[in-house]
Image 1 (cartoon, rainbow, N blue to C red):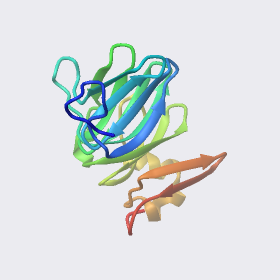
Image 2: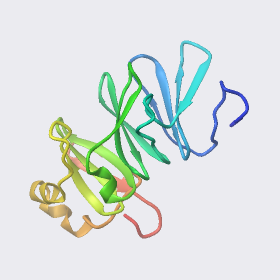
Image 3: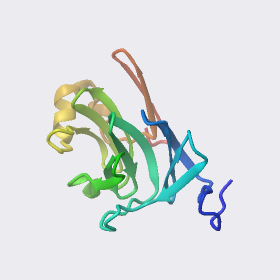
Image 4: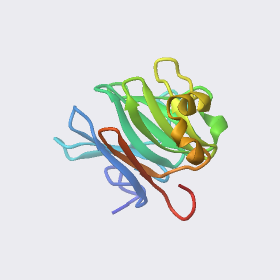
Length: 169
């Protein structure tokens, strides 16, 4: 339960996503903050901005593991990369222009599908690009759905499923 007065408590009851990294940290994305708790210790830390204060995440929807040391976070103000060891937060260049980023799902080692207010996009982490055209070039069968966005996704093998609310996805 949220308790804004207690520095070791959750600050927001609107939990959007949970993720456990390889260092036994539980990452909790909420409408207001990103929380992290080391499951080996009774401690919860909450933050919404980089240590330098230059990057601030707003309403975090989804957390996804890029690799052992890095997470991606989707938010109403873009797509972020979080370095776990330093807890450095960095917004992916150009992601703010797509509005809210609702979800991302790894399709290939260096190709992710991104759901945004602008519809579905491709994301290539190594190049830090979000080309919609590349998504449709790789998956032309998704063209009827490219303008939709989704809140969560799941895949098994080559079958992908996404879900949303109302008429969004």
